[in-house]
Length: 462
Image (cartoon, rainbow, N blue to C red; front, side, top):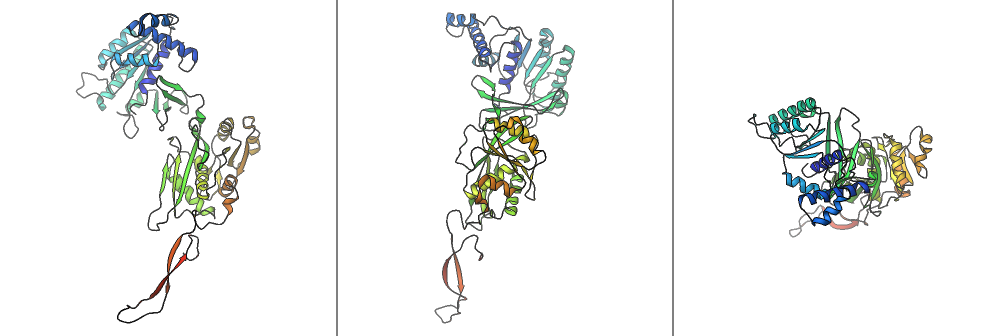
């Protein structure tokens, strides 16, 4: 997507490939980058002359000897890229070359002359072949440019990194042949409003596709997240009807909070609301139906229900069925879940709980972040799981049914008979049959005077 940080990430990769001592996430590497940036500003005449040059003299001239990198920008000028690199503190490695060009014939000449180890093309939608009448970014241009870069990479034995745009549907803009040409396809995504970026692989000929990179966006570029499991739990509100669970994103475990709001609808003619944000609407509908069917004290037929995955995460795992059910029940009964309790489990249509993949890895992350109890599905080999040294100090609560899991999370309120309402009793009007009248002034009436009677939603008279 535009502005997600593709160019920023690749500019950092180019600088780190050209200078092995450069590391944005270590204090020594960051200082190394700052001194190199000062040296670059001094060479360009930016800043306070002698002071800047003196600062750069400590380490700016001693750039590490790394790979030769050619960064080709078809979207920005060289001055724009230079200003951005100074702001990010990328230093001044002597083996990093910058070229602002969109003509692929010219780019090919530079590749043949410099013979870099790595070439970065930013982006494939902006470069073009002059011999083709099509405009840059068209299907024909993207296909032919991709094939030409593929031939150059094999002939010159260089690694080529291509930046590509995506369509509204999330697919790479251009022909599918571009994805078949390359060895690896990486997507850089912004999962929500947080300054978090996820780098995931959808194709990888040289390794696993399960690896996920998690970064935080700052003014000086992208930085690796030290503890990605808790990145979406920073602003957790203990008073809300929120429940924590562990989800898998590739091989990475993330802890997420799912909140729910259940509100009774007093308009019998209005359609109840079922809104899911960040979770699958079909799974949410199945969870609500299973709760009504298998938990006698829960009746959601006249309740509006909202379910939210905090932090803007898009969760697609079925392992989050149980956490949705507990969050909805927490709001329905106005009973909060203990802050040291987590929930992991999948539900089936019969109200039973099923095992989830990599349960030990999920529980290990929960224990690492201080959760003392966790409701899990009843499964074979439970004793071996409970004896895992990574789970020391965590109590595992095995449950085989949804009703049992809700009782463990919320207490005996789950077994109470359905209350009249959440906010008190509701008044209704019932007409009582009367005697038929007559006369000119009074029309014949089949019904007598109305009598007000308090009628609850659980009344047998409804």
